[in-house]
Image (tube, rainbow, N blue to C red; front, side, top):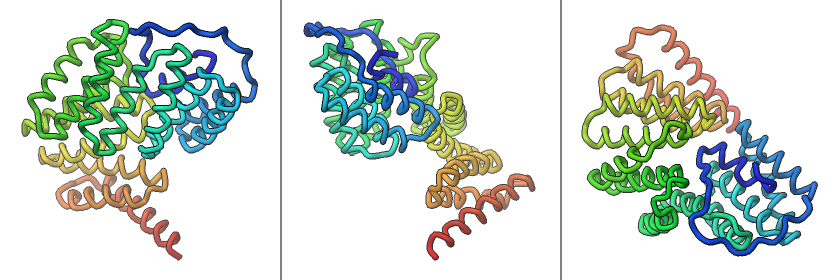
Length: 314
């Protein structure tokens, strides 16, 4: 982990890229470490790693404020970058975009690589529905990557994202081309986050080609990779996709299991509305499922979610 900690959280997200493809400005000597800043960054990493994104955001916000007080570009870049990741995880897209732009400016001033900020901003712009700008951001990232082997992880991320954006626009031909390019540069030690994103693309391509069985297999693999990597919100979304795919393959027990597991995740995070929405997908499937244990577990979760929702409205 670097002194200012930018890559600690980056590694947790599976989006670590190393090296630099553009000339760097002259760097000033590293200043003496600031104890308060270091404590906030280190504690933020620990909170993020254990899945407490809200607490991590608070700690990184403290680090971001302290970095601005010190006017240290690397510290500001690290704090803004890590705080942006938390905002992405929390779905606070406009704030994440603002922080990424601040991080990019400071990292460039400090002579650090900024390709990853372009990749993340493209993700943010996609979620904001600004498809053209998101595509432009991926173009900027690819220009900076320029096919360099040192940036293969970043290029896989960019190609995968472009494939998903193409699928969003009902363009499977472009999506297939981007997916094949990403797979062609995949290497053995690629992170699970990268592999999970490729599994998502594989599943969505299969779905677009009306092959729900292959889609279900891919989404199950995506969920497994995210679970092992500790990316639990992404895992839940993959389980939801897997449930839909299994439902299309007329495998009601498997589909109900995937919906239940995703719902359980949301219920544990007190997101009862989303949990109930998934449980409502699972309940009709139980009519054709001969699995008393699964039926009981789903019924118990429904009761728990409804009970808590009633208590919240009292």
